[in-house]
Length: 218
Image (tube, rainbow, N blue to C red):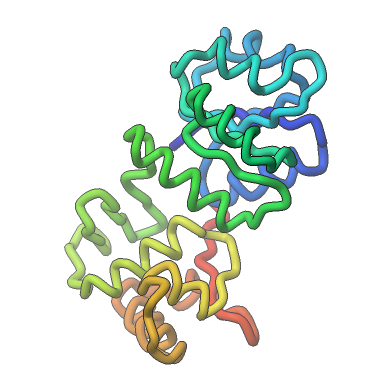
């Protein structure tokens, strides 16, 4: 389970990020100024840091120079000028996201960085279902369940964005790809198959007039 440090002085934004990342299975620690970062890191280890640039105490560019590649960093900041982005990336940031941002985009960018640094979620368990995300296999009560590659891609999209309502269009984009030209009803067909094979009628919730949500409140 990836452990993430959120360094953001705007408390509502910090809290929103923390809430959404914990919903999809990450654990998070929040700090609100640049001076607290290293004292927190002395007592805890992190798989990723989300770092604002403009912070009380020490700014993000100072902080990343001192971390020196020890922990992957994604800048999350209102400073969107090209020279700021170039500076952040040259200092060793793994990504640079400009506010305002979409939470689904943020979680996808986090997954990408964690995948590169080998810290991404490799398995998922809910009730009688265990999904081996690295091995692309799903087990129900210990027995391997046959899924098509596309069904597995949809399961993976739901797991990685669990507790978040996803539209049919968004599921098509994530699981089928940006260039898929098919009808959104294909999502419904695949969801029906997944529910039946995993007894997930009550786990994959239908979101009225939108799409679906995989509910994991454990």
